Amino acid sequence: MMQGLDQQLRQQAYEEVNKYREVVEADPYRLAYHVMPPVGLLNDPNGFIQYKGDYHLFYQWNPFNTGHGAKFWGHYTSKDLVNWEHHDIALTPSDWFDKNGCYSGSAIEHDGQMYLFYTGNVKDENNNRESYQVMVESKDGFRFEKKGVVLHLPEDYTPHFRDPKVWKHGEYFYMVIGAQSLDETGKAVLFRSKNLENWEHLGAFAGAHIGSFEDFGYMWECPDLFELDGQDVLVFSPQGLEPSGTYYQNLYQAGYVIGKLDYESIQYNHGEFVELDRGFEFYAPQTTLDEKGRRIMIGWLGLPEEREEDHPTIEHKWVHAMTLPRELKLKNGKVYQLPVEELKELRSEGVKYEAVNLSSKAQAFEGVEGDAIEINLETLETVTSTITIHIRNHANLVYNPTDKLFKLDRISYVDGETVEERFCHLNQLKSVRMFLDTSSIEVFINDGEEVFTARIYPDVEEKGISFAASGTENVSIEAWKLNN
Ligand code: FRU
Image (cartoon, rainbow, N blue to C red; front, side, top):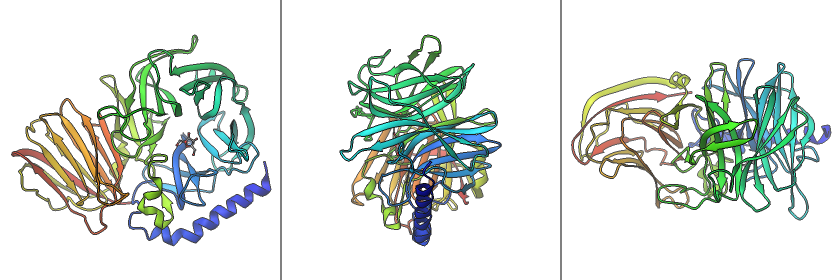
């Protein structure tokens, strides 16, 4: 490793953190209980693992400005998935094989050590890309030693070949990589190894013209394959899907297919692609299996290239955040996402309104307001008219039981005026649980059957939340102030 450059980059990054600490801290949109960067741009969650008891979460980080660039791996740990501690930088783009970025990747524990795998991104003077998969060793989860390139770009793929996720199955380690084949279609490519160093190329097991997929985007980013309730779920972030009805409304998607991977024949029979999130900002999620046996997912509460430079936080020298950690469950052939149990620790004062009547005049309830709050609505099965939740004079949740559409709208952060909408179809609405932070919203419908995640930027003074129904509806509302 280039010690000199590594040290220099670390130093420069810490200087940025120190220089802008107060500017970032003074931002009223700074999040109260979500993981965000100390300065600069944060994107994908990387290397998410529970190691020696602690949860480690690394992140794609550009400390030098709020655009994309030569990424570092920043590092947070947590004992409880609620309180996060920021640590020294894990990786800097200091070597010939990662000089334009230590791109996304994953972590695995082996013989008591932590190993990271990431993509070394290299671009030449003409912007031609090279991609190297790199292994990193750590004896304690805090000091990291790059061991070098363990995988070169195989033929059949363009250099859009990245984001290794590694896991163990039987006697082998497996690695899935997000790729673009030479015909410019997205693929998930599989490798295996006995020692984490020598990787055997097994080929693409999912993607365009494989199994049930015809064309399905020009690139798949951040694949993650894991077992959930006896099924093999492949999560990935395809690029290049056209909007269709209420689906694929964002520039890029993140979702999954469910199937069974035959590790011998490398056949993966799977069902249809399902979007993980129906809101505005959600991308590149990564999962880990924790010591309690839970499959936990964290996503990037952001989206690449989608008006990133317009986020109001940029004035305060930072942009983007992570979603809350969510436990995944398989239910009726669908992946459900529930905020992890531990998040209840964030709750302080709570209020409960049982069997209240909502009507066309919007009503507020004492204790159900603020910018860091969890709100649960239940007994919604009986709703027969349109119900609306107005959030801080900026965003609305609306459910219309006639067309069975659930909607999140918000005022665009680009012009502060246009109302933007996202929808999902429900068979029945039962419950709505939402987490509001100073500038984000995560809505979990029917215990995680559908999720809407978004950044919102209401006026800082606006704290009001109100509820209305076009008919008369009887619901129960519970809320807690959240603090961290
Ligand atoms: C997804 C992604 C990855 C890449 C990383 C670079 O958001 O483009 O494919 O590794 O971000 O920061």
